[in-house]
Image (cartoon, rainbow, N blue to C red):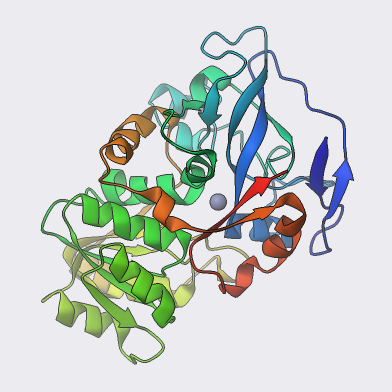
Length: 346
Ligand SMILES: [Zn+2]
Ligand SMILES: [Zn+2]
């Protein structure tokens, strides 16, 4: 099969012909129909992820058609349309037994722990636990855009933030994660303040339901601006970028007993950011993470997509070929593109 392969970190990946994958007894092989290009792929490519062994095929936001099925798989058959969350569970550890596959002790992550979906085919483990069936009405490009940024945002807003109607939600960073969070928070009835340094992205944030925006490049005191807009601070605030400055602002703009959810990854030089801890204590703030979402929680999100309350297709920026994915991957740290880029031609 054709795949995007890198043999060293931070050196240009190449299109190569590699052996077709075969399914594990508990797994399947999926013909990739669409795969998103994500900042996590960039982090992996520059060497921020200790799970990656070289040579490596990136790609974790995928949707496709089951091509081959392992002998122990009971739920899936050839031809099924499927997607997966970017973290797959083992099904046997205490976290999986408690239903929290997103923090499994032995995670399967395509594009990180194993070869990913920047390829014509991808092997997926523990298929009965980790695969999600796609409604016929959901196209592959949109489905591919769900598995990482959208589900992580859904979990951040709904399950971790426990956001409810009428609350104020601040979203710092309006890339794929932030725009997803804005759409989801708006759908559950919250008032959203979007923060970014790009007017173009803030316009998109408004179109997706943000009721107020703050351009952080033109606002010296971002947290104070959000507190002013929300008349006392956000109930829930997300760092959707993953940067010490947005993390600090997100915690600082909370109202008392508010919840900060860290969604954007903090890796490399940014892995130990400053936290306004005196404020966390005095105001009884909560600091939470969001790390994907279990396959069994997709039902709630899919129901909101089917009903039209969530429209993830609006987050798709442009569709590209596998060849073009190499440049898209290498420039993913530059934040130039609005919306999510998806590979749809292999
Ligand atoms: Zn597990
Ligand atoms: Zn991703």
